[in-house]
Image (tube, rainbow, N blue to C red; front, side):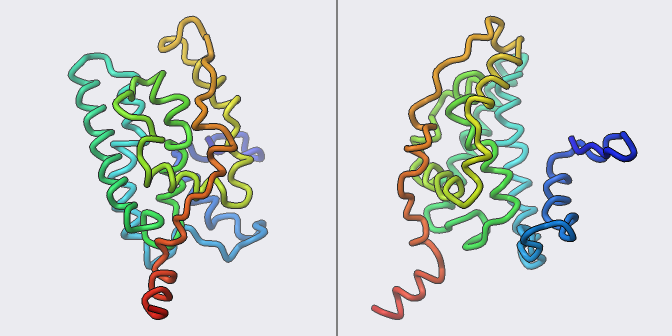
Length: 209
């Protein structure tokens, strides 16, 4: 939620509208106003990926966790893991969702991936596979995690407390499990080698060859 402190009212409670606002709406205050995660030439691709990621992954994990029937759960979990496989396959040849450029689509996907093994796999019954079992998705996660200033926004203790101790219907005892080893900082900081997928690096390699 974006709160207007002067008007004392909610400015926006839609997450994607908020990150678009932070991307360009505060350039007058930004330290790096030239950074644009939603460039005009990629808006179409970003929209296409968001149309796949939001209903099936971002919202898909919640549809699994809060399903009120077996049919609803089966539909949600099948959509979730089918889409994860699609993204896993795409990331075989593409560093980010839209090529060599990190975009808002990647930001949206990262926020769910970083919580997947710690929360959604266990608490939300997204149990078919752990994220760490997807080599491309986990490498992609580490690629973004290792960017300057990103890791410090990933507070796993706060994430675990926020889900396991607050979502009473899903965890009545409020018992917080141990953080999975795959979510430890040392693991997330292991080399990802995804820069080798860069089109620039590929072009240089071909030219040298």
